[in-house]
Image (tube, rainbow over all chains, first blue to last red; front, side, top):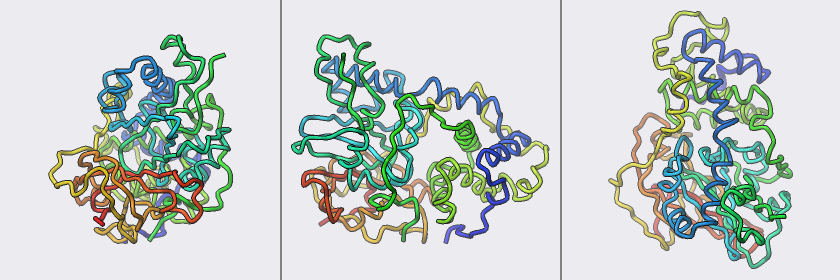
Length: 204
Length: 225
């Protein structure tokens, strides 16, 4: 068995999670292995710079430009790289298109794989045991918990991200969005619509 | 042959509780810190992504169940730092000495963060092992699901899809094989496929006859029919 002992070193650190993190950070910092300023920078990157606004830009472009959409569905990695959205946890991108016949939804049952450069850090529910356990077995019931009901003629395809391929859902362009600019379309794209647990907003 | 993390299809977890789209990225401050410490420690170069995943999976079932998501991360990191000899259990007991560490020159600097995140860590490699399968072909996944190289080792075939018949959707090229890479046995890249399974092949009570689940599976996980 690979190191399957039950005498885990983490038990030596304080049990309360915030204190456990703090203790580890302090030890690593003291030895020069971690720079607290780098931690601040990492947190800032995912709190303020890298998030679903990136994915929304890609979707709005695909809604606005047929050739872009065709290229995106064929080779998403190179298309999003050209937009500056390449990076950690998004090295191999595939975009899957929703149609009246097929609705796509993404999960990672084994951990929490998610396209960070396009959507940022996954929300809590995406990492929850309930979502990971149920999305593959009863996607329609899970969708109902997000307020989404699909017609029976729409098949559901759930993508379980078991490797380093990261999936982004291209939702259907909402009715009433004809004539909107790309910037206006961005505002209609929700994070959940790009995971497949939600639908884009309808213009008011 | 399974561990707690392999939870696809499991019953009893209750409803999913969606958060608002504009909820904070980190519900509590320490969670952001846990993520950042984990990423920064990873850049010391003492392990790879597959080793990290396996470290989280090897938390005892009791700990896995009672820990929240980022508690799993930080606890697995604490274990890994000792296992790889970066820190000692003594450091955890007494807070560690302030002597410079031999790896300190590798510490991630604030000014390098953006570049490191943008660089990523691609897992695609040249296709040196011939692809046995093509799009449209029917295949069966191996059963039981288990690492064939290391007993109790890391693997990425979920147990709910073990022994099931599916259809190749596409070839993603060759990718680093986690079952090998998690255990210091080399990258051993293999063809990786998206494989579609009818819901009725996986579940006793499928919700809809046309629904499918697609998994990314390495060639070693698949057998021809």
